[in-house]
Length: 315
Image 1 (cartoon, rainbow, N blue to C red):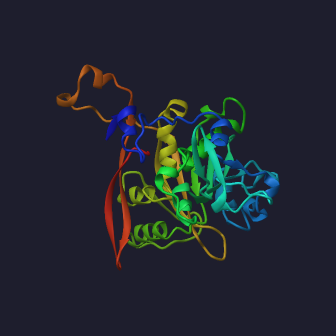
Image 2 (cartoon, helix red, strand yellow):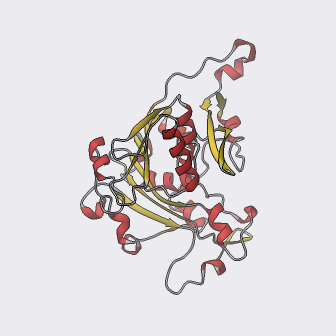
Image 3 (tube, rainbow, N blue to C red):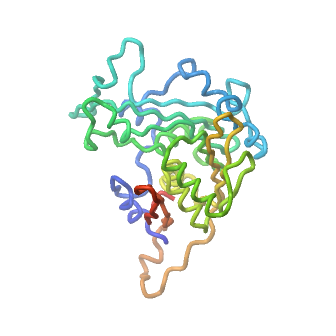
């Protein structure tokens, strides 16, 4: 299913005038909305251990890309961006405030930890706590009206992607999205069901593949650990061109806890669907079109799982 950039924006939550992201200025956009780029010497040391902590170095090596963080001599730049000030003399998170124009906001305590290997087109999500979810942990909780406009992982990750690797980095193709050491219960349930339905179990690398036209792929992409990657492609189509997630690889890292990991493969998008003559017009036929993929999402209801159909402008 396809729609114009403007129409696709209506599927976002909250709605947008267009799917294209309005946030393109690093670091100004982040600074305005109180996002803090944590210095590498203040990021927990275990975050840099792609082997010992996450057990994905073997997978990265098999993909032909760097298997180490920059701290260990590799090409994966570890980034932590917090929606609060973690300095020693800073107030408690629930008390921190910031002002944009004439409105005062409370910080949410959100955190995104991820790595970027811009030279080889790899973006790895390591730890994601969004403003919407973090806001509920504050005392008192922060309503949706008090959330910052920059609240999607895709917006934050993109701003760093554009600045790492030089001025032309925003045009470099992304080849792989990864979500590693997954602990989100809903995502784990979706992965387990996708495997079980096919008589499979979660195993080490290389694990199992689900292609883009399968129900399993759509369900996994519709989880909290997958949909942010789809957002990023649609929001930055002007810079990245037509890119399409073609398959997902499911495996567990080489760790004692064997937490699931996902690799989404990104390739140039295939030709768009034909527009039915009955619904086309001169303006519609010439409109810039953005893909919207109908994704299945599985959620727990009692002791069972029910499938929910969601239109994703995020892909």
